[in-house]
Image (cartoon, rainbow, N blue to C red):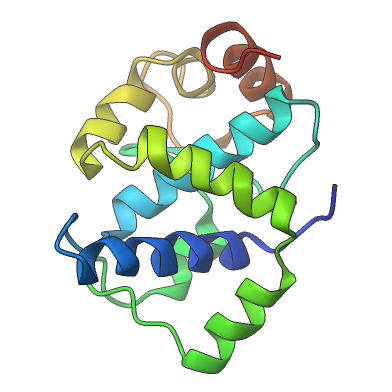
Length: 157
């Protein structure tokens, strides 16, 4: 599987959400929701034995899994502005196979609100273990724990 930067995957989710917003089918994505969708995309990719979508660490923050580089890319958590050229460049990198995976992730997890996804991650073992039950933040969530959890709970090979 081709590796991407996490921001490339994030931009795919932003672009996909814009389609739904323009059709009146969804509300505009927030940074909190975007960060959780990245986590779910990575988990599904790992559980399908397709490898990581991106190399950046996934950290266990107070409000759930976070790719810090993506978090730092946006100045406003409620207005995920992306330069048009950067968007086009990111979208052109993603293979058709990976776009299908991202579409599946968006269909399943995109229907949740940001707080719904936050609460969901807080009940799952990768975040719980990394934070010692919600008592210690900013530690890395291991790809191994994500893969095992997603294989057991979400992905049927």
